[in-house]
Length: 149
Image 1 (cartoon, helix red, strand yellow):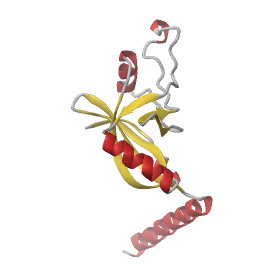
Image 2 (image 1 turned 30 degrees about the vertical axis):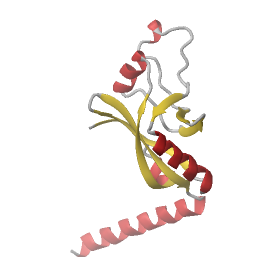
Image 3 (image 1 turned 30 degrees about the horizontal axis):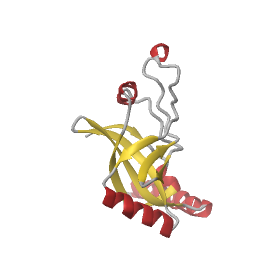
Image 4 (image 1 turned 45 degrees about the vertical axis):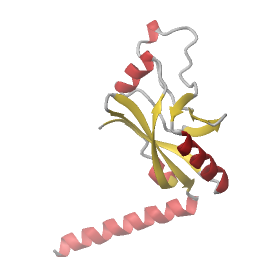
């Protein structure tokens, strides 16, 4: 499994409870562009329309800008390939508990481009500050232990 793109801010901004894997419906030039690592999933999320999952706000710039079709939209919604059972489960969870579906990483698995997304709740600002303080305290403790050890 080769990781192509990773959203590193997800762990800081969201509490991820469950992770899911899905295929993405792409055009040929988008596949080439993603394989070179030109995709951005930073501000993207997953929504449901007509019992189908879509990836919104994912930016896939053209592989060769000069050869791009004139009607190409780099921010177009991309359909995710999930089983009906998974879609029903995710629709219920996202409506029931006010959770968000956030992409975590894009990778290649068995020559197919897959996306891993998580079901998570957004962290509040004070939770983020507590996490930063705890991390800084742990660093100080480790430094003191190195000095004495």
